[in-house]
Length: 139
Image (cartoon, rainbow, N blue to C red; front, side, top):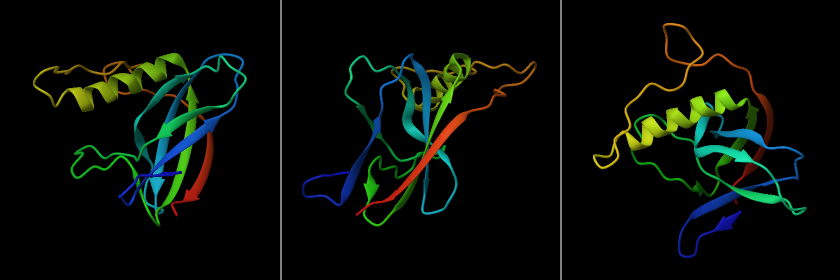
């Protein structure tokens, strides 16, 4: 946990151990026993080139309207984190989903397209994840 000076917000980092081959990953976050939501920019490819563990910034989850969004954590929150590994096509689906959600709202770089899909005649993706979960309370 890293507390911001003159602020009541905290940043959280997940420490990942060395892996033998690249892994396609996604964070999901649940706050105070609500529901699981994707972490903001929580989609990443992890490959450790060094013997040292890597730290990855964890951001709060988001809902689709993104109103009053704060990416940091607030003191007293119970945070549950789910780290999911997936196939490259599933990673591509989430990458497209995030790009449409975030960049589709700006007039400078509009992104309006259907995400990659493995469903015939529909938008979405049918897949399974390998997941690990952990939780902490923000001090």
